[in-house]
Image (cartoon, rainbow over all chains, first blue to last red; front, side, top):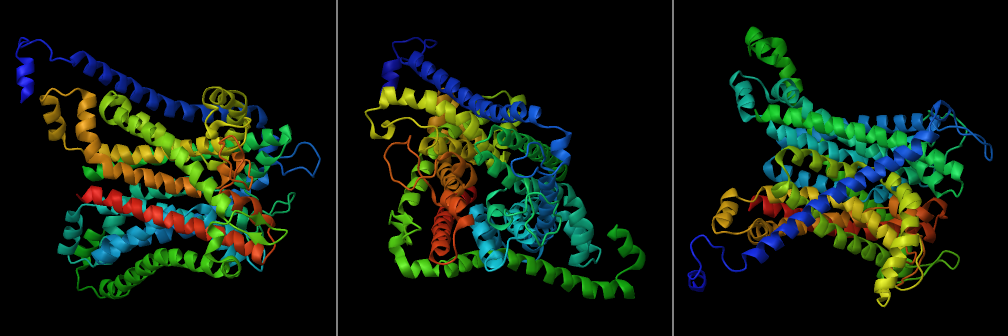
Length: 298
Length: 318
């Protein structure tokens, strides 16, 4: 190599030519990368702090416990949206979590490798389907020709939630050691007993993590609800899912489009409720995830 | 525990055998049905959209995709302007998000002190947990005045000779949407890129260091080439996310049916158009055209997601 000729005149411990420039480039890149990371964290803090600063002054007991005031009247709250959201999320999760976990059991315990791969692929694709498209789909199946309803909204949310829960469950079930299966088989246990009494209890932490992440994701979903559960009579405390249920995301969306500062203040208060719920769930899920993963990995 | 049950009663216990005879097929059938359901939903979505966009399809054909007129009064519809808005806003978002994400991933895998790696990675991922409607609200109240009063006049004064930055600054428009989409795609691209970086074989890195490479030279010559397909997959996945984002974009893009070179101007996207007009659309060709928009969006996201998964997966296997 010609570099040996170039380096010879320099002593053994003298740096090769260009070392200063190379070091400078290296340092520059390192600084830029650090700035990029700081920027991303700063944006997160900026958004969260904005919500806190705008939401905290606007939030009070009335807002959380009262229904919206009649049109044009001051005051009023968002309690009907909180209740509605809770019902929507509960129904969606009652569908998505069992179906998701059962799907995961099928792919890890029963399905042939090819089919298992196909289902995982389909779930990934389903996860990539824009949620507004999911909303249009449920509108086309359940709402068209009839009216919006809490059921339609909840089912739309469950379609969004399903792939998240299922993929997370598949990941933990794959981590359950084969030796536990084999121990069960050696004791003469049938597959279903091994699944119900060995595999699921072992993976429980991870399954809960996936379910919580699914709930956190779905809690903030606006687009599907806009087409399936957004036209509600503003003043009533509807808890009946066969009518359109008021909910927090759509409330924030419509308040944010309003020109009135009072509406914006309410939007921020609702945003504060929602972001606290979502962030706490996300952090809890992640902490759980770390614990159960490290336990499974031994 | 089942283990004690089995040893106490043994496999010859009549009740246990009966339960086995029911339980075994029951669980198998139940899980199989769930598996089928997950795939069936995907097919059902496509089938429903194709079916219900049929009136618009027969009226406008495939030309719908490129046509830029959207006039509910005259019942003439075309997706062109919205397709343009979707593509441009998403590409700009990824243009900013990709280098930033790679830089963050480098920081998280090579530079950061070990104790802060996990916390910082989690903070970046939490960015993805912020509901889009809240990010949109933030875009309306905080980002848009900043853009209209500071960033856009600044860009205009330096780069105003470019068509991209011509025209008068406005708070709502393509640039605002692109920045919000940048924030939404950054955590996804970062997370996948970081994962791909972590799979770089340690021996290769050490070999580069042993040859006297600086850290950046090692990254450029070892980490990045090995990770390239994975990064491309991550970027495409981010693109898919950006294509489909509806709510936050609706809140900040200004929602205009127009194709303008200037990024300051209001525009529209496929998803935002559905959000805007679907709730008030009359059944018939109007509604069907909006469902056609959703179909175009679905096809785009399918292509993008399949491509990304294939790339990311191949990387993991190879």
